[in-house]
Image 1 (tube, rainbow, N blue to C red):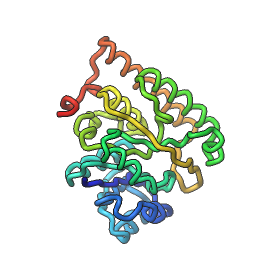
Image 2 (cartoon, one colour):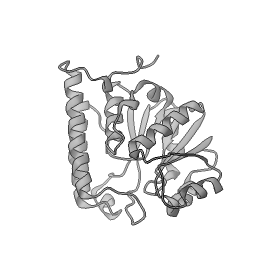
Image 3 (cartoon, helix red, strand yellow):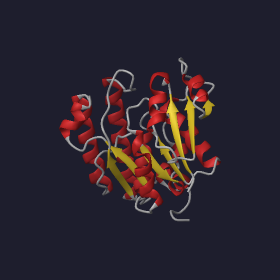
Length: 249
């Protein structure tokens, strides 16, 4: 299978090379970096490292960046796409493990779960309020969707081509809640979601939204969950939760 790693980048010059070096050799066919108008040397370094580089003419946001990532990966014939943040917040060494679960038809979507235990997450630098928000929202989302993920809010994700061709991710937010839109869509389409443990890494160079944006993100996540409940009970038909094509076709 053709496996493509996509890196949604913004000011990742300080951490990009470390991230790339952690991707096991031979585990991906191509690495695509999409730069969202970085103000540092991210693009120059990515080209020096031999990555496929795509640059936005204006900042499109975290979700908007991912949309470009997935369009390009599908255009280049990807069978599996793994998204890796180039800020070194997630352990890219897990790439073959995560994609292997899709290759072997165990899962359709695989996430890195940073909360195997409370002490590991907090020791890794996860702020207490983010840990508490994460636990609360993850509990709500698992209960509503019937899933059993250890964490719904990880940025390390692998998707099969079928998922990307079925889920209408083009309708999602261009902001951080894009990730929640996508997972709720995947659950609504009855794809198989799974996760693997990954260390939490919070440090100065790693990107992280502040408390105010975290609150906004949390409220937006609850709205997405409400949309899911209304859609699945037939009260409201959501275009965002309606597959672009029947799953499996």
